[in-house]
Length: 188
Image 1 (cartoon, one colour):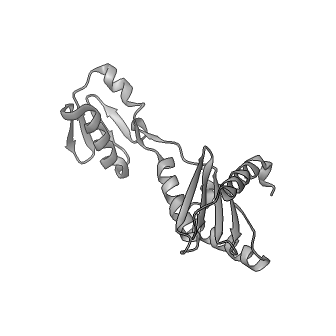
Image 2 (cartoon, rainbow, N blue to C red):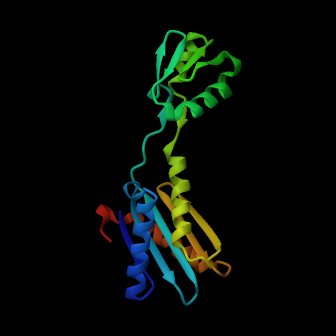
Image 3 (tube, rainbow, N blue to C red):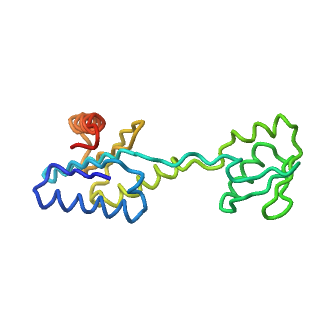
């Protein structure tokens, strides 16, 4: 994970870079984030933080956490049992029964069972976004409570301030996103 901080003096930039690195390490996201760009303007009390998401685990599908045994599914990874059962009950109702802690009985047609493989039990990307937003909240100053998110396909950008966020800051944030996205090979 690369971190670049601009806008403050040398000490402030280095401090915020360390805070970014420490926060994302502490919440276990350093391997999922490629780059973090932060712009600080303490005089106007405006902060922009842009996080570019890198590697995210693939969604977990039904066949990743079960084994079919005739008209039953044996759960092979217990940590997904509750999500799997909720998904199956939501989709198939009473035709899915929990026989034991790790065995699910199916009263489904063969075509329906074939389609089960496409069902997503858990998408780590959704959890990843929530955890990144939690990290951003920890990094931004407490007084910067006015927030303006700028979503993108590859990451999350937040503008934060004590004051209403002006159009000029929105444009600066959008330029920062384009600049970060256009840098190849992680070269700042």
